Amino acid sequence: MNKKILITIIIVSTLVLAAFIFKGRFNLLGDCGSKMAKEFLSDNNRIKIEASIWDCGATTDYSTHLSLIDIDTHSSNKIVVLKGDHSSDLNVIWLNSEKVSIEFKGSMEDVFNLKNKINKIEFEIRVLK
Image 1 (cartoon, helix red, strand yellow):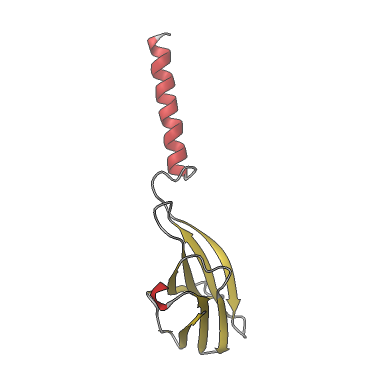
Image 2: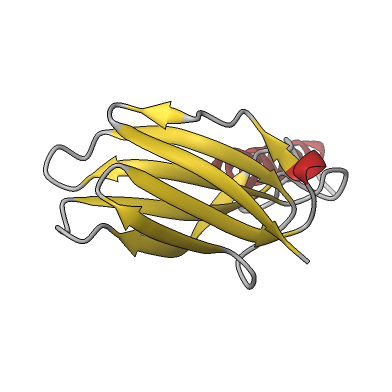
């Protein structure tokens, strides 16, 4: 095979592989991905809590991130991170306009970075058995 053709094939193959890596087609760089699992609207439909499941590759566990989102301004504040995928057992109950109960199956050891209060809204965690 001609040396120029071989070099051209190697260069083109390298460029195609690099394009796949940087476009996220292969998760070789360890990038995290997330998907929205559930949302819980407040009674006045102006605020919601969104649960997203994060996956950062084979060497890490899934995590569930809950965020408080103002529907009008689209501003977002992270409430809590739960270890594992809780999309099937997570429930959020708006007790009133200023208090929210977050329920899931697991233990308090699965709860990370909990913000007890954002603006005027208080959050409580209930672990279900």
